[in-house]
Image (cartoon, rainbow, N blue to C red):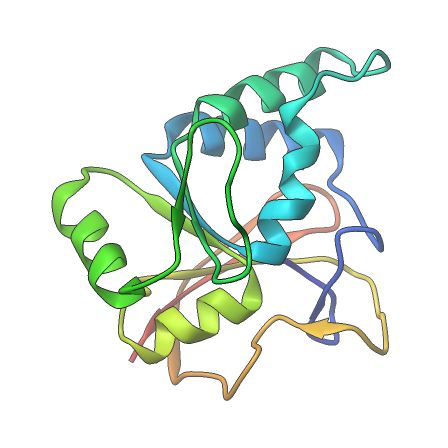
Length: 169
């Protein structure tokens, strides 16, 4: 997920540069699927419907996102959109089964969901895209106590953004 220097996530406060957006397109195209919390899924539903002002990159991302199998963890939603499966019960079993039966990377999107899955030992890796922005408030990247982590990689993604990759200790 994208994070400010002071540890918050907010899709309206900062966006990706063209180079970082291209990275996200390629990453989405390569993923096996994505597990969303309700709030993040509702934000991402933006990509379900073409917008007349989208450029080629935005169209490419929308296509990749639409093709990506999605599992949406929510007890309040009654239904989800195309290429998505609602997960309302037995979350630990469903996610563990996805990990065991799907080859490739499954992204987790949403800090509250990531916190819950981390506490269950179901997160293999955290990728933080660190932006040089200070928000001072908002939804923290780590929605609960930060799990003990070990840095395994860092990469400069564009002139301002670092991707930090951590694994649980």
